[in-house]
Length: 285
Image 1 (cartoon, rainbow, N blue to C red):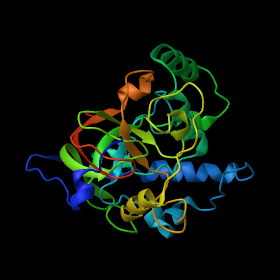
Image 2: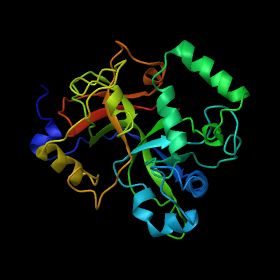
Image 3: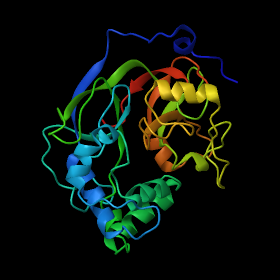
Image 4: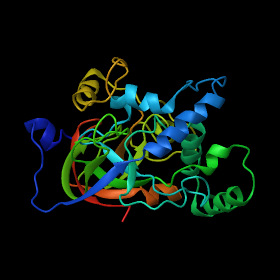
């Protein structure tokens, strides 16, 4: 069992004079597209109806905005090399910190691809890129790549505030750990909260061929998540949900996408959902 991290024991954050920052813009267009898709899928179970995507981004600005210390992923291009968002002239990298604004079909397709080895992955990509998939939103699945961690706030809609925020893309930083213990020297990958946890061993974080048991937070772990501004099972009324979190990378049984999602190295051990110090070696660049 991992001992409590330095940040957890002392209530401090790691500091470094050598860090690399980049200005990024929240991807409003992709949110609007994903939320609008729910209008046509409102009768489908688990798909919430959104009558006005633009208004949704303004009314629930905290749900879609970039908060400080959140894992930021790049959405500038699509996985299948086609679709509405494939060719865009972007002065800033477009990013998101939550998949709450994406269509369910989009994020579910991404998670499905994350379970494949390299051969099956490229076979699937080539097949779906050239043949109808039966679901147009699969064509709009973003090629999600870790950009770094947010240093401030930014909003999805310009009426709510500044849509451009600073993202640390390299250097040491203290962040919120995910559902798996980390140890000094571990390579760090990111995963999709709630959607992917059944694909990993609940105790070790290693990828499984069969479904695992769902990760259960104790009161101490929920306390850490609430302090970082995230929702917990006992507090669904406030906080951020549907986010991206870090976990240790294990080569044994890793999928092709697991290897691609390695973006940092752990520099101090930490328990589940505690604060952890990592060295970012950005995946997106």
